[in-house]
Amino acid sequence: MKTYHTGDPDSFHKVVEGCPVPIVILGGEKAETLGEVFSVVHTSLQAGGKGIAIGRNIWEHGKTRLVVEAMVGLVHEGWTVKQALAHVG
Image (cartoon, rainbow, N blue to C red; front, side, top):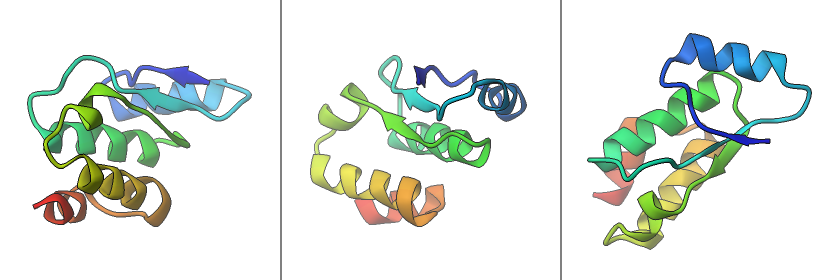
């Protein structure tokens, strides 16, 4: 199921726990920084989310390929926000 991140790890964990199917987060509004996007992704995964469905915060970035690779690192390889940011440069 796709949903927005609640903005708070504890409340998002309650959403995940209360849903009978895996949760992926939507990208939402355009973020100010890439670090903000990576932080939301990382937090949602730590709270039990299973993935992402993000558009503009990836495609409108000048280094799209590197951002996608960093998202793969966060979702599938357990990267930290710091690792994701370092990958994009």
